[in-house]
Length: 64
Image 1: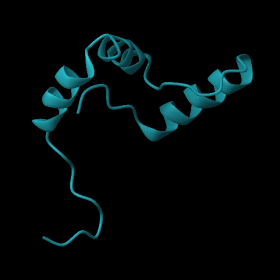
Image 2: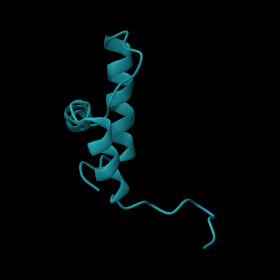
Image 3: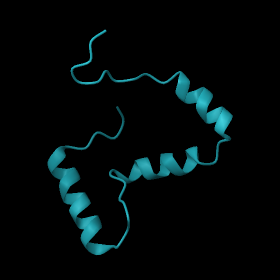
Image 4: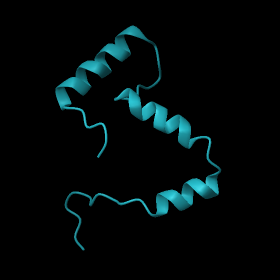
């Protein structure tokens, strides 16, 4: 998984983002905000096709 951030670092970044800005949400780490903005440029059909091939993490406690 790209851009893995340790929990303590993420908590500090989120706390700082919420205290310095009145944003409705914060994207931690900042690199994922760039990825999200790029994805918004894709047509829905293309995005759906790309994400259909993406791997999925198993849910906790899920049984096959």
